[in-house]
Length: 315
Image (cartoon, rainbow, N blue to C red; front, side):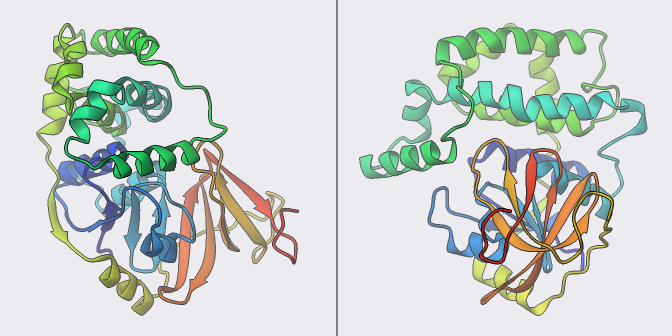
């Protein structure tokens, strides 16, 4: 069963990246809205503790991190390709830069007081306080983020680079066809453009603005609402079906009890039995009282695998 279930919320930039890819592919998909902040009991039932948004469900297979989710979507629906050969390796490098450096500059720029006032207009003070505490916990120990003034200056350089990349009249960042780099960059522009007073930063970059409109025109495909409870029941009724490989030359054995943890932010470990391992992906098997037996998949880039001892501590 290849039914795609995206667990997301409307204001999530990384969710917008995936929604646009689903639109680019012209796909039908199920839409499960997750809470913006903890607690997230239904999310934990499926992921085992991974709390970042979004994640993708295909039956009893759960995919974390958009870098992996996008590869899965492309395998299920290869036309049009998300990784066109003509875009070469630079598409992957540009996408990773956009998902990290560009994203973590766009966020503090947009979350200055003018942005917060517009995006949270009408929200009660206790909600704003809870959101701030949640995000502070997610980014504790993470790199120092730029001030809004520094972010503004850095975005001038970043947008200038992108404007230059489009200077030869190409339709998309790596050529005439859209690729993963376009959607990774687009999410940050989408986030900034939600705040009209701050979106003026894009004014001088006309090629970049026109490029963004082309990407946004892909839309979001054909979403259909699904409850989180129904998604959990669907997982429980299914069995993990994704093909996985295991490379025994990487210092782990099949069946090892391991934790998989993001290395940047929201460093909540997911613990389970190691069943898949390659240079690109790690898969752990876990069982939840509500969701049943699941395979949870992560990319290798950006995540750390640690063996657990019998007491559950890191070995």
